[in-house]
Length: 402
Image (cartoon, rainbow, N blue to C red):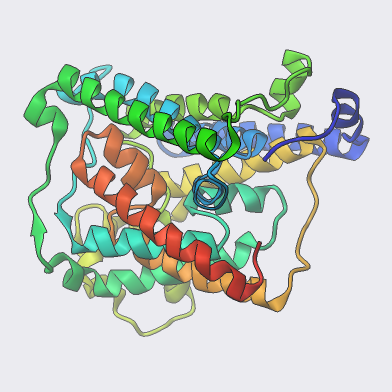
């Protein structure tokens, strides 16, 4: 995720065709947002644009959970994890008072507070393995695809298939032993819950610094893009990871204002898998599965895809990354991969989809969304997924992955 290019090198790589592409993508994104706002709900255009900003930030900073966790596991480098802690710290300060009040700008909002059980533990662990084999998480694959990395496509297809598979097993998983949901906001109050979370974030950040100093004698600073003019750095990157973390926290809060709940990504994948199965006329009787009988999900199953808030944001992330890649002059199709890499991406994708669906979400909906909701299941997800990443990292050489 580091850059060795000089300012001149970075700027000179943007061709006229890429500048034109960036202009056309911007126009298309704005026009699509306007059309959605006028033809559908007024919020839908904003959701597409919020997704676009997220995609741009993810790409410009190469902000990802998969690589950040793998760097800590293999190299004892914690810069990426520290940026995630900054993101979470800002987000809980924004979310907890609002969720405690139960409303934002006069509209009701709700937290993603889920039970603590085997579905979270097993699902997060499976997801952690899958994101190392698939070389990306739920949001990571979206911005990789937008940047032209075709290795994300088999992973995304596998994600949709795995998510659909998990909806068939969803009732069984929910019947496994589990504890009642725990809300830190409800049990302690907003201010004490914020203080507790900030202490945990600081402890994790300090642990990464200690691990780096123990191995290298010093710790790595977040200095991506230093020396570039600020305006060009914002437009073309590279961004420090912390910049992206701040943007993600703000856009998550904007999502709360738009749809009344924190940002999610993985919710769209089972829906995409189900719609593909229906399009292919597979006789699966999906609408009888308990997952799809929950409030709102049966409606989503038969409604147009562009009416689904999560799908709109995911499309926006891809478009935002496509815009960022052209602004940076780095867009190119990367589709030539060894067969073992395609296999790893496909297997990893299925594990991502299955794990996220039974664990109430991915690194965004369960980890990020759970923690900013004050739900203890977000922390449980983090621990289980990190152990899954430990195993996934060890399995990567079997597929000749770095």
